[in-house]
Image (tube, rainbow, N blue to C red; front, side, top):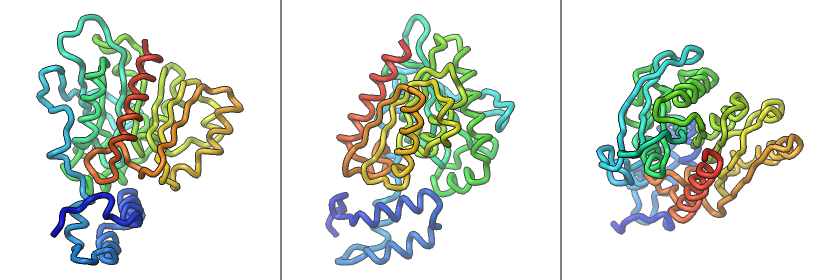
Length: 295
């Protein structure tokens, strides 16, 4: 069978995957619906395999990269889940204190992609902390299906407290200068927005395709925002006009970028939703924003 390519996949398959990844349909329903697109010699198993994250071959920064000091730490989240595990990374052989970045995972815990993003962030000159909100339930279980089910068992506002606690942990770390930003993806995008609501001392927030706060919450934001949206992501994008109106009304500093013809999750290089051009541009903008706001 000819190798599958993103261009050969119907957009409706990506929409189905989005429903599956956000718990709108279960795995059985996802597989059943995929069968509608298994035509012309294309099997359901081939489609399923193609859409499943590939963590083995996609790491951009290896866990043992000699340019970094990277280790798992545990910090306390008294208003959230208690003891929270996180991956702490910083450039090796650096002198002086560094600005910090909290890296927030999607709705499935601290998987290899988000750990990789944490290491990428550190290589750009930051001390990064990528927490695992599944820590109270034993941590990321090794696969995203179980990770999603586990994360559904936690209250999202308690998880928000876990990431707020990460901010406080990192801001007083001996290698951090106290200037902190946050970047988050999907669920993590909502967390990034909400940390901007809750933390007036947060200096920069970058939500990737993240859900929006309420109008009342958004009116409290003082943090500069860099908002990254996928052009095909109607589910998230429909909330932007109302959010934008509140930001404008309250003179919040923000920049929003919409990347045309890409799907929700376009930054995640482990699935075919990934768009290299959009992801590279969005990440370059993210790092430039942090370097400006956390200097």
